[in-house]
Length: 321
Image (cartoon, rainbow, N blue to C red):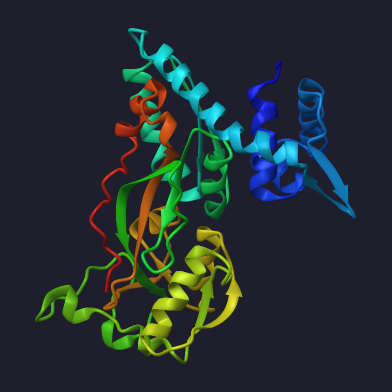
């Protein structure tokens, strides 16, 4: 039968996601484009693959049968492409990467510089996405590799078809308007005061934040849930006055004195800010991870970029209190 990978991917994603709108968002198509792919696949098979039920569509028995095999066919195709690519003496081709703002600013640029030197035939195309969407972008085949975030308390989904590889671990601290905790004074630009017991002795308990206003992402995000979980474990319910997902905007609000938030070294490097940064006693961490399909892990374009995706070493922090 004369069908294409794009048609099979559209059907597979429709089986996985349930709506044409969701498939379009995952694959970067318009809803009309997805419908056209499915219609072309119906012509190729000579069978109805979808039926309309009220205002939605669902797969027919033939559609479900083909969808079950589509993922395996796409995996075999990916393995074949990788095998052909490995016969080349130099790395060439296109690698599609999805990443979130911090990774786009701090991790990808040096990796691309190193890639140009080591593999001039490799073309990397990147997409800046909401961090919670990058996992689905890899799962759907919209991108080949993604940089994402994984939180121990709120882990991203695990799928045998996807590989999640840790890249870097960051521990969160607390960003507060200058002087919020006057007993632990250290404004940005100063040095951490000496104290018996070192940084651990200076660490702040989340329980002390109870009366303060917070600036956090919404509770339906992985980051938002992870911080709320840590606060509740410390016996405090964060009073979130501003729901913000953008790191630079969050730091600007903290600097303006309207609330506190959690930060990491990479986040602080996005926007130099006049805030106090306090180590936290609670082990609140995030893992920057690489996500890619297991069928692509031997593909030369992927294996050539992975070793280059290391965050630049953070300069010695002068903001910790």
